[in-house]
Amino acid sequence: FTVKSVPTKPIEGQKTGTSGLRKKTKVFTSEHYLANWIQSLFNALGDEAKGKTIGLGGDGRYFNKEAVQIILKLAAGNGIKKVVVGQNAIMATPAMSALIRRRSMYGGLIMSASHNPGGPEEDWGIKFNYSSGEPAPEKITDKIFGFTQSIGELKVADIPDVDLSKVGTSKFGSFEVEVVDYTAEYFATLKEVFDFPALRKFMTRADFSFVFDALHAVTGAYAGPLFVNELGGKPDSIRNGVPLEDFGGGHPDPNLTYAHDLVELMWSDKAPVFGAASDGDGDRNMVLGSHFFVTPSDSVAIIAANAQAAIPYFKSGLKGVARSMPTSGALDRVAEKLSLPFYETPTGWKFFGNLMDADRCSICGEESFGTGADHVREKDGLWAVLAWLAILAHKNKDVPEGGKFVSVKDIVMEHWKQFGRNFYSRYDYEGVESDKADAMIQHLETVIAAAKKGDKFGDYVLETADNFTYTDPIDGSVAKNQGIRFVFQDGSRIIFRLSGTGSAGATIRLYIEAYTADPALFEKDAQDVLKSIIGTALEVSKLQHFTGRDKPTVIT
Ligand code: VG1
Ligand code: CO
Image 1: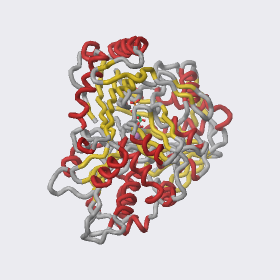
Image 2 (image 1 turned 45 degrees about the vertical axis):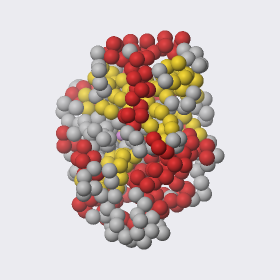
Image 3 (image 1 turned 90 degrees about the vertical axis):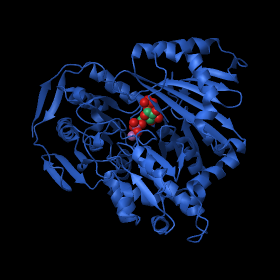
Image 4 (image 1 turned 30 degrees about the vertical axis):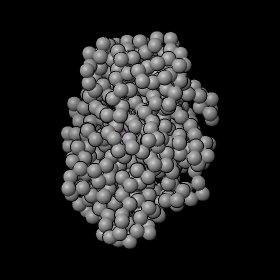
């Protein structure tokens, strides 16, 4: 094939956020928008990527079918030797991470805007992962952004569109495209982590029942093969299991607001023992028991506390654990009890990769429904569901069928009894005008600059207030301005940060946490317990004054 040089001009604003480049689909479909970013990526990678193999796939959203062909032509034009693509361009984020690792590929591209809605009027996105399967670090995403500002040429191979509907290899001169079963490598990795026969035995107990809601997103392509074919679950335990280009019009975000069908079922008379959901690209998870919600911050703590006993991959113990800064301190208490190295990182999975590559972290999580481990370098929704199944199986191993079944709620209550409860909530204010959000953060900067240890904030006494800075213990890189935090003397916290995954305007996130060791409070509603500290947060930030908002868009 020949490579055409197509002239182009820089397009403003192609800066990667928390997780890849996300914009309105209409922006991505405008002339050269996607091609410019992909070309800039190859420019940033330089000669290092030439002759290498990369992966490519996505969450099945609208525009992926066109995008995959644009990317293949640019890959060939830029000297990539081979691209491994999931059948029908499908590949969940953690599955891509597993694929890169198992095949020792140079990297991989994921076409997804994750939990953001999809369709012509909604969002599209793209992210690049490196050779250990981890999201590209900031030093590379900054470099890509640099190239987007000076780009003048696209290198496009004149190869035909590739048929991605059948598994197999197509050759175009020196360039190759291999279409693969998107479950194969991923499931092989999951089988190294969990005891599948034991999980199958548990799943088929008469006193166990289960539903998984794929929210019409990418895990719909994995749930049947995994939970039904591999683990013996009933076919009707999979809900919204067909991936759709617009996710059926919903937000593919597994939380109490957007996964409402599942929530309704789990709080009904017909509630199964265990319910779970995943997001657009399969890296997030929500875990529910009958009439019970497990917060993601508790989930990672409980998985870490039980991993060694319940999950074969961790049988010799954990190397360490990590959480993002706004995630509750529940994991900290587990780390302390188990004497494990513990790390607090900025929001976004890219900060966990270095710790894992250096063998310092086995399990990590975020409050935003992200939980994962070092079997891959992304958060992993199905892994989290299997981890909970493994813990349930372990806790019930001596309970005869029809005996006193240990439920999700029992496991969480037991955990709180041992460690105390970190009450937690996040308020999101979506679609705020950027200058108003910036003005509020500016105001908070002046508040923390003046704040001193011992100051009273409502019912709370300040320990420290700052804008979180992270120094990576492995490579020494520094990430500044990662969120305004007020840490109080009893461990309670108020945190403000702006989202880095939106496609328009600003989203303010307010994270609130209050700790209690008093068992009498454990069953209280988090919103009631947190009422006073939330009031303090709104007062301190003057949020309503700056944004005009008197209530959040989403509460999780
Ligand atoms: C959000 C979450 C963050 C998560 C990121 C990507 O980022 O807060 O914890 O890692 O989304 O998740 P932000 O910058 O909007 O707060 V996913 O599943 O959308 O890739
Ligand atoms: Co996601």
